[in-house]
Image (cartoon, rainbow over all chains, first blue to last red; front, side, top):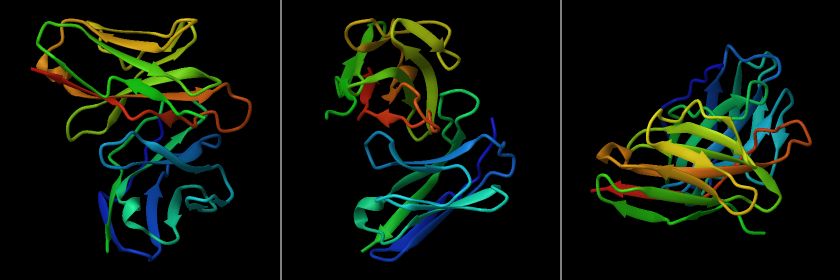
Length: 110
Length: 117
């Protein structure tokens, strides 16, 4: 399975944008880039996914590098409720299981 | 549209007892996955099932653990003769039949927290 690398933790101020990076230099041509997040004491929650083009939805935006070796999850205005562990996961071509790494723990300051 | 339902939310068992964890997938979803999250660790895949079939059980411990997803009713994760090391949060996820490009979108339940005394 292709591996992802994320910073262990990040901090943000409330109502400011947050850019969460993910490196995936061994990504294969058919791997989708998925982002999930896990709020405290809850199950993981799907955030967004993409293949080659940048993607937007009501929760976030996903910016994918042209060579696909990295991507960035963008929260446009962080709220206290966005404090969670964010996971960048590759998949879609080699089976259905999700391989969670350690993710990035995002703290949001009021 | 109800999400993935897991019950019980909390389960306490003594060593040697059996634990049964239930998962009802989202309506229309026929794929179920179980994951385990040990204290202070990440989520680890355990098993992937479709109705009446185990598709991938590569993450299941070889002994004491079993899973099923019958034609009718919820998926069950069963742990026999529980030990303290089984204490963890167990999450179930479901996904619809793949009709498009991103077949890996999974929707998770709130989890069952198992405590073994």
